[in-house]
Length: 113
Image 1 (spheres, rainbow, N blue to C red):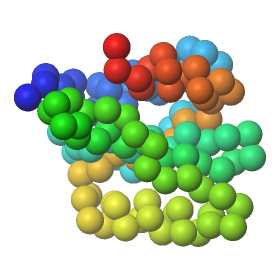
Image 2: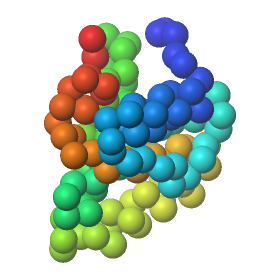
Image 3: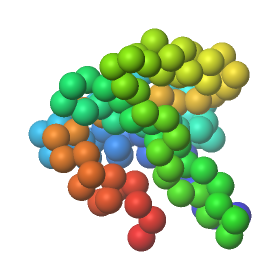
């Protein structure tokens, strides 16, 4: 099993990294301080979200994976999905990031090294 940063520290790091790059981030739902699952909603320039979650891999590692994409015709479905996740797991963190260079942010901060 891999060592893991406490959730609140990882969330803080994501927000500070975004802000240091001149971008914006905020916590939409605060979860369990140490071991809560973290979901990241990455907003595009149209305000539509892409949801990332760390998913278990066959080798036992956990990799950030795109799990849902919001489109203009499924805005409410995306919000409903986030609300269901909060209801199912009140310990979940939901972090929203508005990043100008989202692909670079994902590559530099969410991709395994």
